[in-house]
Length: 414
Image (tube, rainbow, N blue to C red; front, side, top):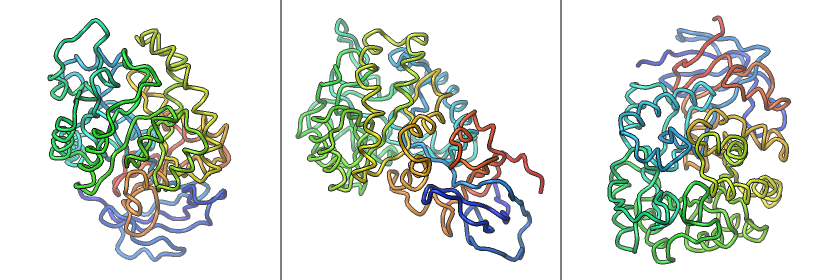
């Protein structure tokens, strides 16, 4: 679909780089990219002008940790659902995310290249997708959904869209799985290197994978000039992963200050995902979460919130992540207000713009309103630096959403 050339007039930009909104500027958009950001731009040959005086303009929001194929909270049930049904749910979830102002999301397990093509070809309304394919788990690890009394074969997991991961054991299997996922269109590798809440047989303290297996994944990623992100909660697991070359920590709820300093020293990043634990505490059992999962969730929920101020103080790069599954996905934007209890508003916003672009290795392409970047932006009916709730409510405070220069939502006259 051709993108109209346009100018956004009198934009007060809020991108998380400052604790105040910038002075009004004009934004010229051509061929889906920002080409000029300055005061008093001449109209030239643009076909459309939109005046956003008295409103605030943000870069398109970025969620660094989603699961578009998680149609239900019980992930074992999700893994067994028909592929066509999972896909139908996913397309609805993707559209909902876009209408909340998220123009790019990074899927941390399950989405395949078919979804990416559907988005890129304009078949579905969705955020831009960055994917890892299937997450990798050892036997009995996170995304091995079999209980302690089931040893049925799991070779079908890679073929099930609803399975967030695949089970691999040993260096050779890890190498093959990494190569297959990268061949199939993955942008990075995801390892389940610690116990998890939603899986039945791995306690939170359990370490995932042998050292040689993690090193093998890191080497395969490096060969593709990409990186490994890892599901990690405990301090022991995080330090171990960082020492072995993992550069993106997902969750990080139990990280110590010393390990956070190591993360900064190594140039790694962290994606806290607090809203998922909050939502599971409130509604997890209602939607089929097993009792073991409820108890594990309680072990890490408060700890994750307590780490936010510490991570900021040591200078850690924090990306915005929701990690919601199933019926809880509507809480995606509530991560803003939850973090806002512990961090300044501009730092919270930065996690979904400039920092998020760094997490995705897409700096200068997304998360910023600057020449050369994708023309992704959101117009907000108020200043989110003064009220983060303006970013919640399923996009009701967003009068315009643009992705790649295309208007996905426009309630403004022009």
